[in-house]
Image 1: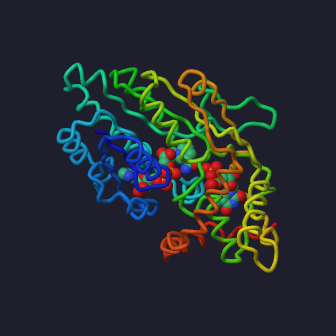
Image 2: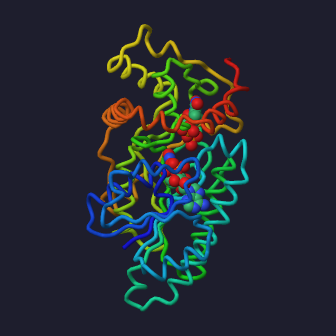
Image 3: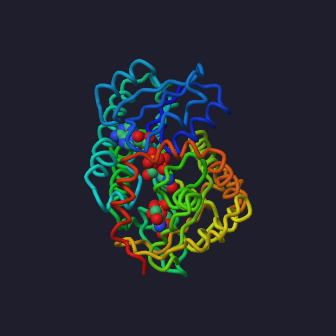
Length: 354
Ligand code: NAD
Ligand code: TYD
């Protein structure tokens, strides 16, 4: 069996759903259920015989120790993190605590568990750490995309905390021999993404006739990866990745934010026409401090060495995503509670239109 941390979040829950569909192997989901963790994401599998949920912090050493010794997993996949750049700007403390300190505790308990495994189980065991392309910093328009050897230059409290966790994971391999794998992927999109992130926020605002807040000049570039393609990449790295290596995972889809928001508007005009085109809601607002200009991924290593490539084009992936949000308005409405509204106020009230 395997243990997944952060499985009630966006990517983790997509991963568990794919895992249970494709594999005949139990999975334990350990999640603290922060604002970003949502058990509804996994309601369709809550009674699945291969699914168990444990409500805990991954930094809780006793819980982790007990879980590892009771279930003897052959792998841990570490998704759990504070993941939103804007929140890291308003309050970096939780990012340091979870992404760095709790990862350290998880690594220490994993090391103690690994050290006492019999040789055969040791050879099978893997710790897969899910990271981000944001650790590499920001690219200029004509720079080559990030590769696995690009130097780390994190610019936000979020990316700095993820970079720190990547370094810990790397060190626990080099110093203690923990069999680690690391993936650094680009911006994910798809079902179950919390509507604080660009794509679900724009869909949700458009459907409510609210302004679509584009930061700065809207020319920042991101590479977009459909979440199920990312989950397939993680399964591939778990199966075939070389111990100690890192793999960059990208969607081969670079887009400016403005292009992307306009594309969402056009799809919505077609699927759910309103009295005015949705693009009339686009509002340029004050930029994010330290906003990285461009991310791009060179995914040649995972494609050539492990045979993975993304299946979804951006056009097909964004269509699936918008369809999902249109068919699951209740999922979004259940999140739009007082805490969420408070966050929207905190993040957007000082971003007057520019
Ligand atoms: P998310 O914010 O949607 O979910 C994070 C999950 O982790 C939540 O369920 C939350 O409850 C849980 N969690 C937080 N702190 C915890 C703790 N201390 N112990 C246990 N659980 C805890 O995040 P996501 O978008 O699904 O991202 C998952 C991982 O992928 C993160 O490590 C993130 O850095 C990385 N990543 C995300 C993206 C993206 O575009 N979303 C891109 C690259 C990398
Ligand atoms: P986001 O989804 O927060 O991901 P990240 O910052 O990790 O890349 O943002 C994606 C891009 O969209 C980023 O350049 C910031 C921009 N953005 C907006 O323009 N408006 C918004 O309201 C949000 C949330 C993001």
